[in-house]
Amino acid sequence: MKKKTGILIVVFVLFYAMIHLGRYLPDLYTGKFSLVDERGYDERLLSLAADLLMSFLFTFSAYLMLHRYYPTRKYVILAIGLVSVFIICFIVSYIAAQWFTPQHIRLSGFFRENVLYNGFYTIFAMVFYFVRYTQFKELQQRELALQNRDSELSFLRSQINPHFLFNNLNNIYSMVYHNSDQSLSAISGLSELLRYMLYDTSETITLEKEVHYIEKYIALEQLRFEKPGKLNFTWSGDAHQINLPPLLLIPFIENAFKHGDIDFERTWLDISISTTPNHEILLCCINDVGTKRKDQTGGIGIENVRKRLNLLYPQNHNLNIEQQPGKFKVELKLGKYSSPIQKKHL
Image (tube, rainbow, N blue to C red; front, side, top):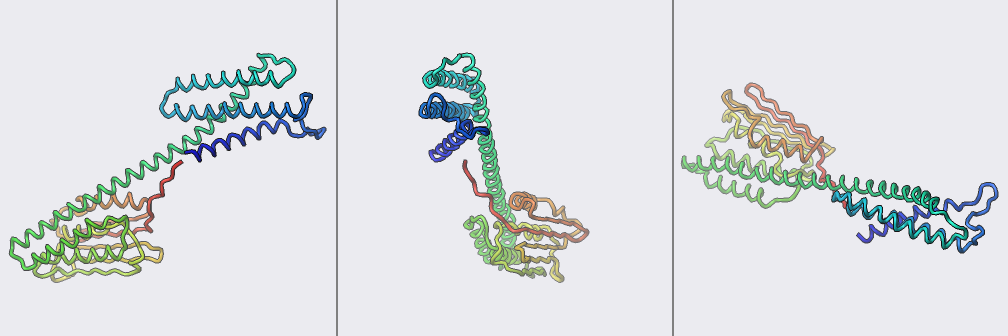
């Protein structure tokens, strides 16, 4: 705060120095400086310093009062303060002018001149303040938007865990109920996946880690059946150098298992994940659906991931979902992920 106040004072001093010294530049015809007149160099220099000091104090005081009372909407106190500062500066300036000026100064003329100058300085202080205030409000709004974004993302991610857990506990319950030999393996696999979901709280992970998680999830889902359904899962590209937010792709795979028409004789699910040289991520997921299945585009999982994509990849992703007779297709293209802008303070 002290550093910013010091910079502000320097700006004001330089501004008024340029204004006042501009009046004493050499005359265009004679080439003589107007700093020296009948009063002498020293007295004229002292008069200039006094004018500069009073102008600075008036404008800086006006700025500080705007800074103190305008944001809190104390307009009456602000108006009284500005008038009080003007009166004090006017009285001090008039006394100083009488001291440095040999001839008599008429009060009416001096008043008009001070109203003109101080009015100009007040306008400058207001312009300077409102520029700074606008910048501050914009920064404040950006920070609030980032905080809201982080809160919403945390909420959306927290929804993934109970949704995932609910589905898999139902599956394990069914396996235990039917005395399946795969029950213990399913519980172990679920434990490993939950460990990843609960303890990996970083903002991003590598695509390679997300793919590994998907492989574990597919293996867990396949344990539900005595004979695993036929599916293809392929991935290619530079997955260990590309990052993305965790648990972003899994809802599409989970949705396919939940709503898909699982077949043991032919391929019912085809998943491919690849990358481009521009660090883009491409996901294509196609699964068979039965004619009596409910709408696969709805549900918590898909709606959740839509919101996360809009927050994490604004204007930088393309999600295309097609539901055709007997087929459900998801195509997702993610641009290079970039973290939120670092917060700055005025």
